[in-house]
Image 1: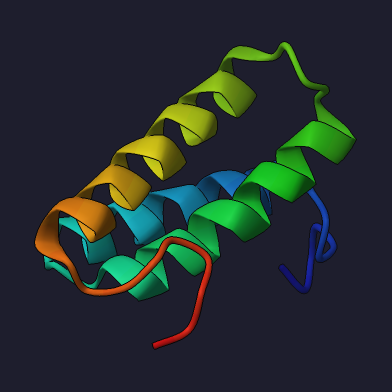
Image 2: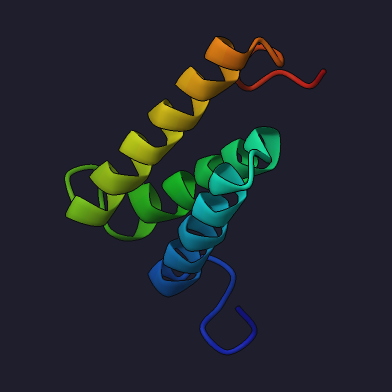
Length: 79
């Protein structure tokens, strides 16, 4: 982040990877927040149709679905 810059695509990919770990640990709200950040960064740096951007969209959707299924809140809304 310090070397590449806060909005670099590689930083976004790292956030996506960390969010995936959080998702696997059941830390869904934290995962959702990081997926949203990564998605915004990738949309800005690589564009809407880049494969990495699609991947983060999919991860975010999956996380939001898990949040609803587990009844732990509404996606994007703090508890």
